[in-house]
Image (cartoon, rainbow, N blue to C red; front, side, top):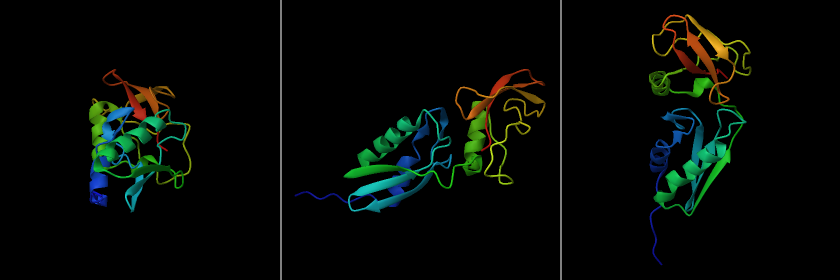
Length: 166
């Protein structure tokens, strides 16, 4: 019977770093802070994953992307465990991911540590990702995804999306 070495945790994290957010394909799920941890046991791996939004329609896509990324590593089983506590917040997004969001044209969210359990109904001042002006206004509570809002910049007149702070 052939026996293959089980990959280590570093290989799992490396593979997961290539899994992109399907709704914002310039950032990965690791740098968005959605992967809470990995556990190796025998010839299997469990990935603990927290969605950015509990009603996110892309959850099944993300779970399958995780499984697909880890399959080439040769695990006998890959489990994706959804963890909802503690909830994901926009504070979990890494600084490099915030910069990628901005370059992509999505205003990165403001820090929320002052009130981490509440999503505010009124948006904090949002900086335009194109001209960096704070002279912006929200035009719609929902953008192309439930986790984004639509804005327009009064300075450069460009529309853009911004992530909701949660």
